[in-house]
Image 1: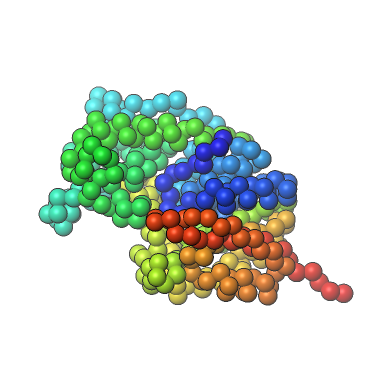
Image 2 (image 1 turned 120 degrees about the horizontal axis):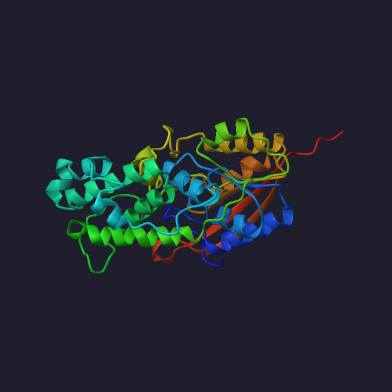
Length: 343
């Protein structure tokens, strides 16, 4: 499949990055490709369809639900009629849930920048019903549709819509929302590819690695880096660009993330990624691959210096246009192996 999978997750990898990494993985011929912080999962999706089994881990509930449905569930429905499910009331009934509470918050109501309450209750009812019936990909489709329609780059709610026929989210109708959710479901479904060897987990990366036998695997991480100064200070957890998806969208679709602290610029990031690499390699991984970008904190030079002092390190750079406005960033891969012991 030539088009990249996208669940709308902020920071999904570029096409060049994905192609280069898939080439590296194919040459390494691992037992399994394991992504510690799989997020949007465009790379695991490509590996799963073109190369072999994958392991996808992410503590974000929204991301995990997508991974579980697409890679670790043998079958999923061919279609879901979201409009009829809620209107007929046979499987789902409108309820007051997370979305309803959000639109009823006084500042939001006063600003007139939220979807109508009756639609919010429909969405909450769908989430409850779909979760009960185990139709997890449909839950993801709800989150992706709402993220596309009424958020700013997946980082915060926005009162203006991305849809040309519905300028403001307060003008949305249930028929319109249901149609958009159904389209997202069908779009996501095309990436469903089950392998019995695939695993999908929702753990902190440290907890995943602690008990995982990585023998023969390629272990990869492109974590939720905070931005460097000038892209956003990221001094508070809420400043991390992944905060909305992890803490708001995940709860909205009925799969709240486990409590954990997103990185800020003050977090012990270098020590954490060093530990990930060391544990993965000591547990038998062929190689640990770390990915970062020139827009991330810590600066690439510091990451390279830190890892080079502790591992046999290979470095590759992939240039491309990233982000709004077509700004130029570089993606970096650091391939880490345990240092040889001199006798």
